[in-house]
Image (cartoon, rainbow, N blue to C red; front, side, top):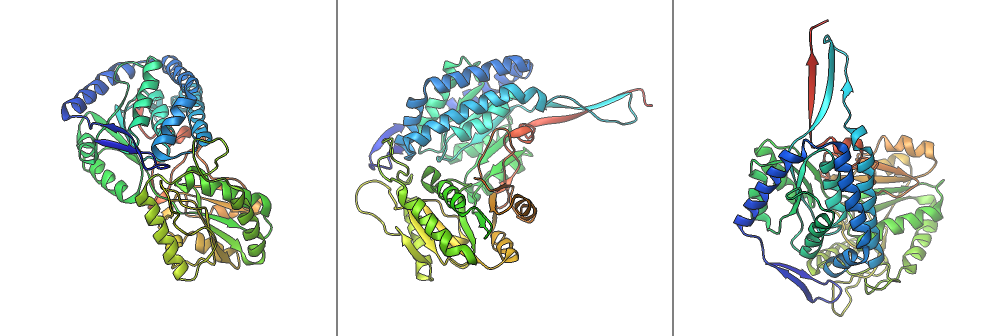
Amino acid sequence: MLVAVNPATGEVVREVPEESAKKVEAKLGAARAAFLRWRTTEFSERSELMRRVATALLAEVDSLAAHMTDEMGKTRREARSEIEKCARTCEHFAEHAAAYLAEEPLASDATRSYVQYLPLGTVLGILPWNSPFWLAFRVCAPALMAGNTCLIKHDPHVPGCAQALADVFRRAEAPEGLVQILLIGNEKTHQVIRDPRVSAVSFTGSTAAGRSVAARAAAEIKPAVLELGGSDPCLVFSDADLHEAARIACLSRIIATGQSCIAAKRILVESSVHDEFVSLLQMELEKLVQGDPTREETDVGPMARQDLRANLDRQIQESIALGAQCLLGGKLPEGPGSFYPITLLTEVTPEMPVFREETFGPVAVVTRFENEAEAIQLANQSDYGLGGSVWSSAERGEAIARQLETGQVSVNGIVKTDARLPSGGIKQSGYGKELGPQGIREFVNTQQIWVGPSR
């Protein structure tokens, strides 16, 4: 049984039976049959479908958003924004996929030689709970436009979101079997990875789970894209716009109640402006309204589960015991739900859990540095390498970006995912790219064509 618990109240809001092996087998067969038809369609036909999906999403923004609020506590405002972002992504790939996958002439000894990009088959998307619609469309929008079909396996705590996703494609009149959801647990998921009708795997989630998925995909010689954990550094130098840096650091840290892989999780601040920046950051954090995620004025809702809250509290308490200064929050509240107060820790050092480990919750962590070399060393002192940001002059920021061990860097801006740009990490944050021209080419056969006679 897949059980969804409202994290704001602790009440069970949905129970959905896990699908049987027979049902999963039928979906695998339907996905393969749909692929054999879909792979031959023109880009124009694929684009028409994606535009219908975008229309269906926008027509149901409020009801789709409500599923996220009920099952994982995302604020209503943020949930609506997620649905709108999904629609924009469908529109983007509908417009640009043909150009991204156009034939590329390459000079050789042939009369004509080129590379063409052909669909692989069925892509299995394995998703976490924190952005259940966006992460699904990050997989399926480019995969479908490349001519693949999709099986989407959501986290078991958001079955309502999964079913709502399937309904979107039904309302858009997607061909049967093109996009299907799998309401299954981990063991059946591993069996699906091994099935020969699955051609590739896209996984978003924890590093530990990613290792398991990657091992199974590799054993079957199947390509995989992994977007795993992150502990993104945010470097703030003395020549930065401190007010804007504090505002964006605050925003980045509390998206999805701080439960975002690409949040600014280690804020590194030059000593000469440390106190001023901390004061500005604290003021930004204190402005936030935390509470019922269904209310329009709420900025920060509950964490998704009690166990996640307990682990965050452990990280915070252990770090305070090692000398971190708690300027805001830091204490488990009483009452129902999985709320954790917005927390600000300063004087954080690399041996503390909030620096060494990924923090998934509404806690901002600040560490001092004395010079540029130390800032870069601290930024790279992590097993993770998802994203990072630099606040300084644009020229200096771009120079520092080349020295950061991360998959993406924002200079004087928030780290985010954007359909137009590739996203993905290195080190323990995974491999491969999603989105942009690079992302759509992850799940294609890059086929080289040589046409004679030889010249």
